[in-house]
Length: 432
Image (cartoon, rainbow, N blue to C red; front, side, top):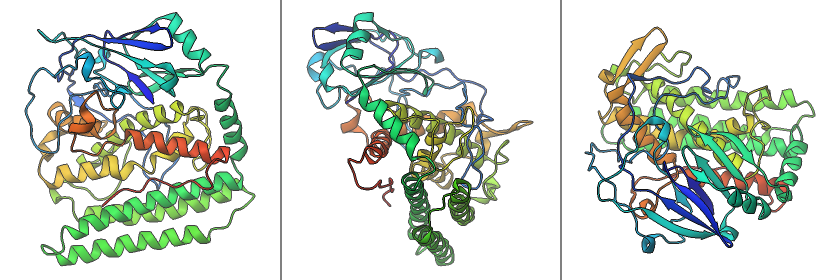
């Protein structure tokens, strides 16, 4: 299991071969606000352009453990329940996350009880630490002896990894990762990722078409036709031959993906209300509200994928599809492709077509269209609910699909494929 710690004031101590975790009472739902929510300049864009800088940008909002809401308008109920010792189980103790202390949003809940529990170190595959969390030196030493890496993050971006010398498996997988770059093995991973990304685009369009079968048959047919065009592109992937020239391989893969992206965004243009002025994907700066949300959403998603890649011991900067460049987390950008539609796009489409997000929730500036604070209050918590680690008890209560474990699984499957423990890599495909 992966232990995620980000509640301000959390302390971790060693008790023999276990970790004793103490979490102080917190008050949920208080998040520092900014005047606007701006996607970073370095946000990685859509499939048609793969040359963007990958560094996630501080948007000024709290992204870790925001009190979740669903796709309906809800009110903040105030104090979040805090679990007693007896309520912490093996099922939920692997993920303990809270609010980002840097956002200034956490406070003591009057009368709330603290949480404390123990987890065996032998159960842990990694520990992720964010914000004002205290871990003693003996804990770090023992985790290192037990080959458990510790990933330190800031606003969902890994800033350091304590990788134990004893963790030879991580060294081996990285050697296999580097060896696979520009080879048939790496090409096969890239081809599977592109195939999964195209299938997710097609499935999202087909889901939109199904919802319009009776209300607008013309749009339903147009969406189905575009989904079929995307799937025709998938067939080209199956016929694609490996070239010893890595530039040729990337050019071919990105060409097929780019063609699918054009069909996909043309399909979205048919269902997004005209008031949002959406004419296709654009960025740097985003010129309309939908692109503003897509850019911000992809930036946030990238942070969580970065953590997942680091958590399983892969090298974030050595990818198979995106070209290597200094400061560009190529593998993270590769693996993001499978989660753009289920995590970000599906939410954006739902918010604008249901009228939950309106054009009035945006403002135009010299640096592009931006979400206002009110718009950020609607969009960001819903997005975080889909991608951030769940806190104790949330797994059983949440009705929204959470993709954090899926991100970890896909990263782990890349590792397994590289090590030869599975015969092929299978991309994540969304349900529809």
